[in-house]
Length: 295
Ligand code: NAD
Image (cartoon, rainbow, N blue to C red; front, side, top):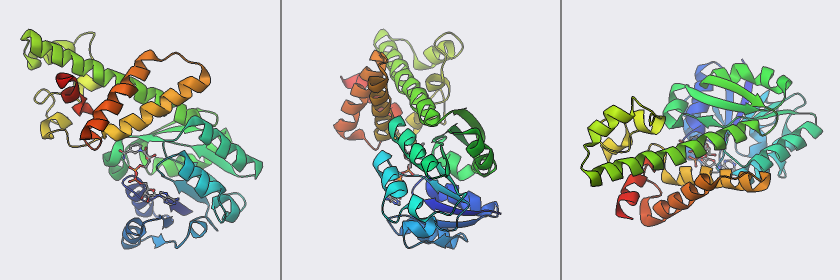
C-alpha cells in the first residue's frame, strides 16, 4: 500500500483516484472545486485543504489537470508539490499538455532530485472508471519502474514511449491521426449520400477494405452501422469537439516548434475550430459530419 496524493479530481481524476482506493492505497485528493474531494472522502479517501497537503509525506503524487499552465502552477508554485513533497517521492502527470511544459517540469523535478513522468491517457471517462485506460509514458527507466505498478491499477495498457515528453508526443500524434481520420470518414459518408450510395453499404465495404480505420469501424459518424457510436445518441459526448480541438492545437504547436509539416493536421484543427464555434463544442467530435454536411 502506498500513500498517494491525487490533484485534479474532475471527470477523469476522480474515478482514477477511486480505483487506487479500491486497490488498497491511502489516497489524499485535492481540487480547487470542492465536489471532487468530497466524493473522494465518501469513497474512503481523504480530502486535502490545499495542494501541499496532497503532496507532503506522499510516496506518489498524481496530477490530472486541464492544461500546461495548471501543471506548472501545481508543481512549481508557492506551496506546490515540489515545495512540499518528501525526498524519494515519484510524480506522475496524467494531464494532456504541451510537450515543452512536460519536459520543463520534469527537468525541474529531476534537478530537485525527484523522479517524474508524463503519462497522458486515452480511453476517456469509461476507461478511467473501468481502470482500462491506456497510459503513454515519458521519463526515465527508474521513474517508470516505480510508477508501473500504480499505473497498472488505473489502466490496462501501459507503454513506456521514451524520455521526458514522449508520452505527450505519442498522445498528440495519435489524436492528430484520429482527428484527421474522423473528418476523412465523415467526408466519405457525406459524398456517399450525395451519390445515392446507402450508408450501410459503404460501411460494409469500407470496414473490410482499404478505407478501414477506427473512425469507421468503432466510432462510425453515421447512425446505424455501429450501434454503440455517439451518432446513435445524437452525438452526445463521448469525446467532445472541444477536447479534440485542444489536442489538435497541441499537435500544431508541437509541429511548429519541431519544424514538422502537418498540413492535414492544420486543416483538421481549423475545421474543428469552426465546428466548436458553431455552438457544438460540447458535442461529440464525430458530430463534425453534421458541420461538413452543411458547409
Ligand atoms: P476536468 O475539467 O473534468 O478536470 C480537471 C480538474 O482539475 C477540475 O476538477 C479542476 O477543478 C481541477 N483543477 C484545475 N486547476 C487546478 C489546480 N490548480 N489545483 C487543483 N485542481 C485543479 O477535466 P478531465 O476531463 O478530467 O480531463 C483532465 C485531463 O485529462 C485533461 O488534460 C484532458 O485533456 C485529459 N483527458 C481527458 C479525457 C476525457 O475524456 N475527459 C480523455 C483523455 C485525456
